[in-house]
Length: 228
Image (cartoon, rainbow, N blue to C red; front, side, top):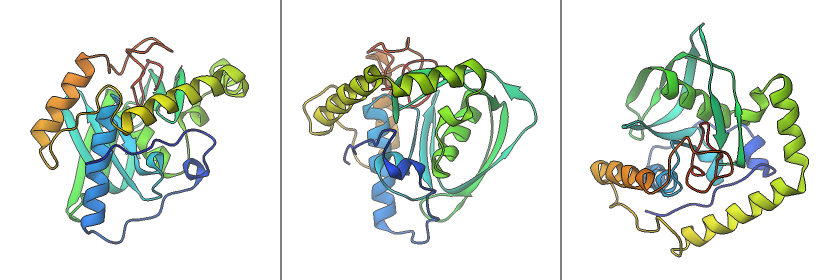
């Protein structure tokens, strides 16, 4: 497996709707394995293919012991709202309260074309909504409202955000090339090893809920912590 380069806000791939997967072959299986490896390497809890530069409707997740992937997903939203914060691997260093629905039904297929159907609430439902947005060319900051949205737009224009994004990109690249924390990867195709790797990464500081801008919590794909 390989750690892939994560694209950050400003890269056109993040604003381009992803294409339906039509070929279920070895290259798709490799992509999904690499996405798991990448997600866990940075302490994330979800990762969409456009975030690694691949414009296909695929995402992976690993939330509180629940791990999986889906191809060509669709999400049906429940009616009740939920409160909670999100950050994003592609918008590093920021996190905001983001309105979402509390329950969803996720449908799609797996890497072999077999049906996937998941009912989810709470954090897992938030994850599914966050990652599905990526496949439509949307980022969580597009969901913000009121003062949260105003502050996010202001922060994104600041030089400090660009400096933070550049620093985190350098750190990720060092890790990707084998010179940083978490460079050791779990064996290919071994779900149990991947889960153990995820737990050990979080114990070492990959929590989804670190304080904004802090290194220990900075690996979250979304959550109250500042995203790395």
